[in-house]
Length: 265
Image (cartoon, rainbow, N blue to C red):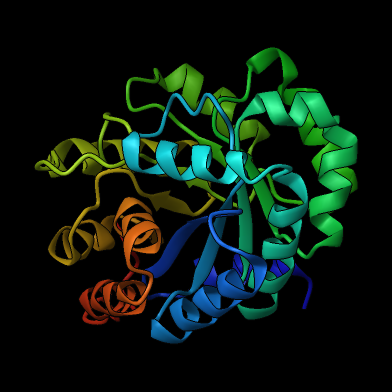
């Protein structure tokens, strides 16, 4: 099955899937492969691999620090491609990046590199609208999906515009704060937003940002097709990687009760 088809199959199952964000280049390649193996075995259904960037403005201090650590190791594109290749051998994998690296390497070139590595898609979290058509064409030519992050404050007309150019999924942040937010979530507001997204598009809806505990993951799960955890895992990988599998397992277990065949709201 093609990577994009595997991703679609995963996100259209009745159960809410667990995605895990892992920044590339944080550790040597052999260690990263081991971490990915352990996280997959612990319950990750899909991987988001982060391409390190020096100005990750939508991310909080933990992920920014991980990116800066990766950048200090030198070239980050090659380690990212290696990580994507291994992650994609385990689970459907989507690359998370900012527009500046895409522009610098060339959208068409970068799309082909990630597709050849086995990625199912690439989400450019700050994709400029005036570059959206070029990026979507480049990704389509490479058979990559182009998930889109949709800001909570988007008007319905903007939702329709973003959704029309997206593929793979629509990303609904659970919090309006940067990644790593550890406070309470406004679940009614998120429910309203995911409902608006589903009215605008038939694409699966994925949520992350601020889903800091298994309990919060269980609360968000009925609203979406996948929950993505990032900062808790990145914090563990940066300090004590042995904790990452147990953390993943705790989040996976929190999603286990959501196995109803009833469609999610």
